[in-house]
Image 1 (tube, rainbow, N blue to C red):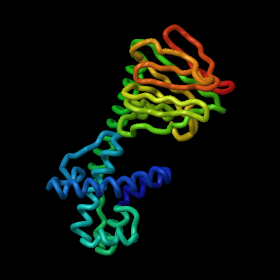
Image 2 (image 1 turned 90 degrees about the vertical axis):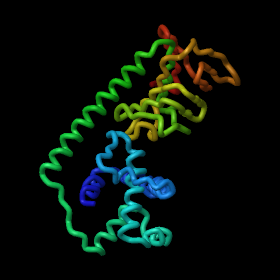
Image 3 (image 1 turned 60 degrees about the vertical axis):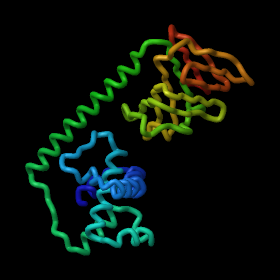
Image 4 (image 1 turned 30 degrees about the vertical axis):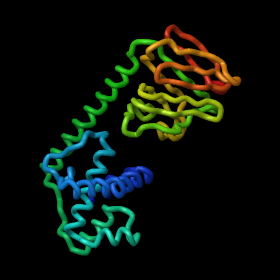
Length: 261
């Protein structure tokens, strides 16, 4: 709990709420699944680890582990939760430990050193993996499409598959399955095809997207006009763009939206 407090002190409120909410809703769902199948919670299994960016998988498992610990320490925890006495499993568990006057637990210096070394290796591996994914995406053969949006025409995500995207940098997200994004006059959808979005501001998606790149298209995008908009279609991609300017640079079709980029 002390380590969680220290970690939360360096995190944004939204990130904390996401983690706790996922532990509560998805973690309890995983807990019920474990009860039904007789499986032990993954997070309590010896040697279980998660990749540095497997946030969703980790919070599902940790939430189920919290629920299992609460079963042992506070059998009435479900009723407390239903009464709204707490909105997070870790806070419920913290209250139980305080009431039980549980002894303070500290990792040894050797355990802390081992954890730090493993964490540094995990981060280095993650950064290299991100660079490799970006290189692979950008080097894909075939025609490509680039949508560039000015500040007055930024693109905003409408729908995406959170289980099939990878954050590559502070501004870039690689979408590998599904993305619907647009603004007041333009909208595009990708399905079963990868695209790289580049955001503005502190969040790579929710502060607006300045550039979207699609590589490795199976064929030359078809371009036509319909209802005063430029319509572009290709396998796995379709988009309609109001007031767009088109430019071709070799095998790349560039779509510019809004004022000065």
